[in-house]
Length: 91
Image: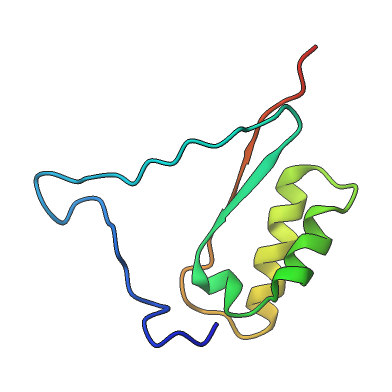
């Protein structure tokens, strides 16, 4: 939250002909979810608040809408982005 370079873009698509992606291998289990979001969200909501919303018994699109609406209500104007990546439980 306070790092002097917290808003620096370190990787972007479209800035050069060749882009080197960061690749991380993690053990993603059925039922797990990742939230990919911009600082437009995290500048206006603390981690605990975000977690509380994500743990609510709501459909994922509604959870994301609550996050974005909360950031907007708190003065957010800078590219508020929230995307959920889900690994569905096996049948």
